[in-house]
Image (cartoon, one colour):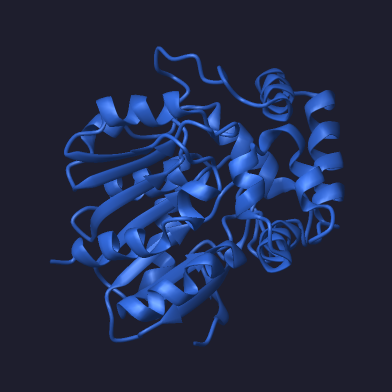
Length: 294
């Protein structure tokens, strides 16, 4: 199967880095990578997408990889970029899938781009900041530090993100687990046991910082600002997946989404973490994507 890389120019002149793979005659899945990440995160789905006859489209979110930064973006801003990419590729209906920091962006498409967006999956995704919810409870130490600085903003946050960008730009199979530190429970370390799986994650992160840290920086800022839509307004079928061992996005986030997004199917896998919730269940996820098209 061919992992095809290209670029799309938006109406405002920004350039988005795009990747596609799968059966071009098949139904379209738009995948939103996590925070940090890039087009290469989607490579986890290559085999199952091919076997399912689907066509997967992904992009490096604004500021990541070779995608132009969009200063002042919100979560909702991603919808314009998704439309630009799909229009350029000649694709119409799609299901929106987001992993981790991609979850809110997938939900934005469901809320703001229906009926073109037929359904949505939030895989270990976070909840809005402006709801009655303890956002960081249960997170690992690195997230607690990062998000405390993000909420405060200013020079300390800027320096923290610049340092993270420098470190992750040098990610490789040997140091990627160390870079994530206390955010990886044993089940996620197990999911990264092979050198190939570690290099896949490292490549996605490394490429995300190809032109600096501002994709990561802007993601953190948008999560702690109003998203630009209400998840209660989502009218298409939704699915949330989460695991109890997750130290990046604790299970309380998944449980909140389960109780606040209409027409939602909940998959709660108590034994899984942030990475294993996806990589251990790729066949099941792909079957769900396929079913969404009827």
